[in-house]
Length: 73
Image (cartoon, rainbow, N blue to C red; front, side, top):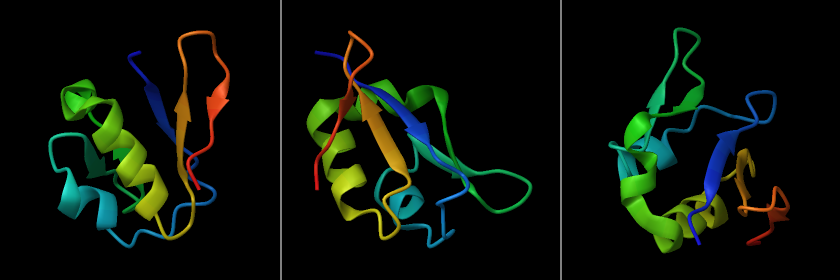
């Protein structure tokens, strides 16, 4: 399954954990909030699940192919 990843920018605390752990998948926008980069798919489902699980604010959201959100906490 190829997960789709989104960042809830209203929840993002800009800690940079996701950017530090997966710089090819996540970056910062002009407001220093996390964004998903085009390389996110290369991290793989397990890497994205780990990033979501370790996000201090829970701002990383994962979705299955059918559009249902995957909860990893």
